[in-house]
Each structure stands twice: as structure tokens, then as C-alpha cells.
Image (cartoon, rainbow, N blue to C red; front, side, top):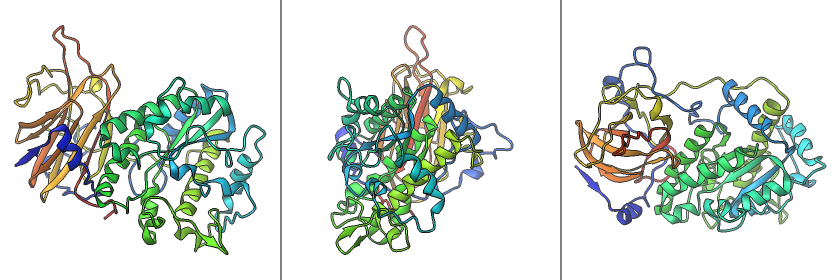
Amino acid sequence: MFVRRSALVAASVLLALGALDTVAAQQAASSPSSASVPHAPTVGATYPRGSPHSPITPAVAARLRALLETGDGHPDVFVKVGASATVNRNFLRCFAGPNVDLADHDELSTTLRFFNESEHADSFLRRSRSATVGWHAGRAVWGSPPPLVREVRDLDPRFAIVMYGTNDIELERPQLYASLMLRLTHMLTERGVIPILSTIMPRDDSPESDRLVSLYNAVVRGVAQRRQVPLIDLHRELAALPDHGLASDGVHPNVLFEDGEPLGCDFGAEGLQHGYNIRNLLTLQALDRLRRTVIEGEAAPDAPAPPPRGAGSRDHPIAIDALPFAHSSDTSRSPHRALHTYACGDQDESGPEVVYRVTLTEPTEIAALVAHDHRVDVDLHLLRDGECVARDDDYLALALEPGTYDFAVDTFVSASGDERSGEYLFVVGRTDRPSDPD
């Protein structure tokens, strides 16, 4: 029925990740509607797929405004945080030069002037301490002080443009990536800086790596949801372009050239067929949305999306309607305690749990993870027909036959009776399809 991987084998199986995968949405028959069952505890507003920008709802706007009040940085300054696709001269630098063509996006001109006319820093042109070729997320947050902290101290920004993941895939530890991104965003928000996270590009250089892209992008979406900070879905926009908007290396975005000169800030029809042009436009749009809503105090532009269906109990689990899936919850707020021990483990997990359900219509390789801080101890279990078939502290990679499966995120209880409940991030995705959305 299933194949349980060791840590080493799991990593190799994970080199097959699926994109915006579709699974059977058969949970409606087994999970009551949201009208009859209360929703499970959800941390933060839901960030649904299908848009280049995560919603700025009234609650998100209030959270971001309150975050800025905790710091005293410059509202017209941002820092860059990332690897080679961020270091590249075609990312953002053209906004400081003469070759800017906003085309049909003239509404962005005020925001462009706002950052270009800053007296504190030239954010577009600056070479960032926290952006270096070849880096994974850990390189920005490790050290004493970490490069990220040094960059924030140098510039006193209010915003950070963040993209990691392409190099993190090669570490083959998605649960580490989730922990590092949670740490990175916390380091920024605790200093009054709003991170603007981004999904990563397809990996056309390596089919094995590309199958991991959707899982890592689901982690980024989940981290953004948990922290209630903006998310740019770069992958969604690139996937529809010729060659996925990538250069000949199949890894980095391409850019419009004219007479041998790169024109990354040309947003005409031809320019927007190229990866860096798209990323530059999306980034300026994200900064514009934040300037208007958070700094200028305009009304939040987006309505809240509904949380996932289901109460999170064994009888009424949260429905995973499509893969990849990301959800941030809190076992300390869950009233469900039906699951105490599991046949695939001998630990006391009598604390509160949250249960998820997915129905697969074909043989499927999946990866699932939970991430949380050190004060929380929740474990991950896979069940079929009520029986536990796999368990791990934070990560499972499995090959599953068609059928209905439950994931239980359950709270460990120590010998002294200490329940280690609390907030966590749960992510599950396919590991057997390329990252193109269906």
C-alpha cells in the first residue's frame, strides 16, 4: 500500500515534486460543509492560489500597520534578500535608470518615485549584504551577526524583498527550509521590517529538481500565511511564458534585450514575455500595494478568503482539496483529543490534534512536513482506515496507492504531563510531477 522511506531514501524520492497538482476533491462526501461544522483553528488569513499577489485583507493590513509601528526605519527603503536571481543586474536596478517603460502600468509611477527619491538609500541599485550568488536561506540567518541583520542595521528599511529556495532544493531537506524561512521572516518582523516573500522559478535544468519546486513553493506560501506577510507568486506568472521565462541555463530568468542592451523594466507586451521583466513588475506592484495600504492608509484592497473546510477532528477532518496544500494552525486551540497513541509509534500523544484528509485517485508520491518553534512538539502521522501507517517528528515521504488518507498533527505529552501544544505549519505536496500548474 505504501513505501516508507528512510531519511536518505526520502530525500532522493523528494527529488520528484509536483506542481499545482490536482487531487480528487471527494472530501465533500466525507466532510460536512462549512455551514454545519466549525472551521479548524487557522492562524492568519488564507492565501489562496490563483493570483500573482497574496490578499491584503483588512486583517492583514492591520497586522502590517501594527508591525511597522514596532520599528523606526525608513518607509522609502527596502533591502534585497536572496541568491543569484536577486543579485543579478537585471533585477530592480533598471528602475534607477532611464530605460523604464511602465506601459499600461502608469499607476505605479508614484511608488517608483517614492523609492527613487529616498534620501536614505538607493534601494534599487544597492548591492545587498544579504544577497549572494549560491546562497540558500541559512546563509542569510546564520552568523554573529547574520548578514540579514547587518543589512537591516545598515539601511533601516521598512521592507525586504525575499526569495530563497532554488539552492535550498539541493540540500534535500524541505523541513529545514521551512524552519529557516520561518526564522528569516521572524528576524525581519521583530525589527519592524515587512518581508515580501516570493515563490521560486521552475527548474528546467533538472526534471528531478523541478518536481520539488511546488513543495518548496507551498512552504513559502505557508510561511507567508503564518506570518501574515505579502507573497508574490512568481512561479505562477513565469509558468505561462515561453521557456517559462528562463534563460538558456534553465534556472535564472531571462530579460528583454534590444540592440544588445537589457531592458528589464520594459513592461510592454514584448517585455512581459521575459522572466526578469515579470519579476520586476510584480515586485513594484507589491511595493505599490504596501505603500498605498500600509503607509498611506488606503483601504485594504482584498476580501478575506474562506479557511479550509472541516473542523480538524478525526470524524470531520480538514479537507485537502488540491495539492500542494499549506495550512498554519494551533493545537493548543484544538478541542480534539480522540487520538492518544499510534500503532506506528510508542509516544504519548494524548494532547490535542488536528486531522487533515486527502483522497488520491492514482498512485502518488507525496511529501509532508510540519514546522514549529522549539517550544512546540507536534508529530506527523499518516493513517488509512483509522490505522497508522507512518509516523515522523517532522517529515514523511511516501508512495501511496489510490485511496483516502488522514494526516494527524498530534501533540506530544511528556512523562511529567507537559503538553507541548502550539502553532505549527503543515505542508503536503506531490513529488512525482513537474512544477507546471495544471
